[in-house]
Length: 308
Image (tube, rainbow, N blue to C red; front, side):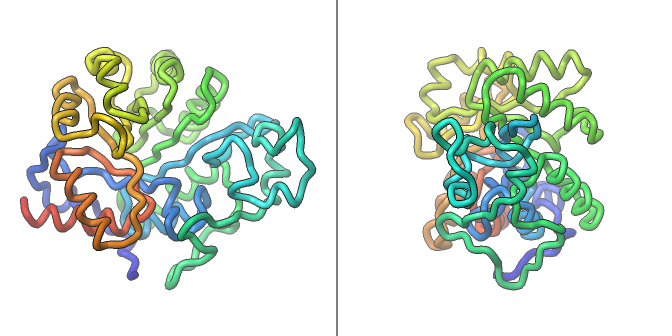
């Protein structure tokens, strides 16, 4: 698969078609854990590949190490995606991220999952350490460098994987120190309602204004909470596309309440089945798609754009 040029702009920045999304722009393509269908998830290599394919946002899931550093890791434990279990003895009965220092985590080798591999044909990562667990600061430096090279914005979409104020405070501090104050380029997400509310309070106190997204395993759960209530502390929702209640009417109701809708996870690797799935949800007005295969999401978006 050929990579898109790094200067590739999102479709809505080129043609601005009339889409059924909340703002009328093309839906965002969000690289789920990076280009995780092709390269190890949550690595600088995976994030860079996604950007060079043309993704609008990269999504780092975040945990805190024992010494308080934010690292990109989906699981609370290390053994699924790294060789931690062969390098270190178990601590407190396992290999939790929170029980290891950043220095220790940096020594681990990544283990590709699913269809991912340690390399991707025609792509050479530019980062010094493309296949180790990165910190949030390293991800930001990569995004800023790729922005400068490609002359286009690259969105950050961190997920606070640990509930509570500690990780939320670290996350806001790192973003503020990097010069982010609040824009369409940054979304903050969590499955935990209290964490999203806490992020809202804390960012307001700091003079920050990032878009906040409440995640849910089903649309029905959000309907049970009342969408207007969700809109009082979040600007959008991230919803399981295979969960109960996901439909065109749910997206329309969320838009009416003032919420954007981002769907997860588009993980079909075969274009013949992946492209129709993307196009169905885009046709319903979904505002963004979390994809393991950003190039396929972009192909689907381009096909939909030609109809508008």
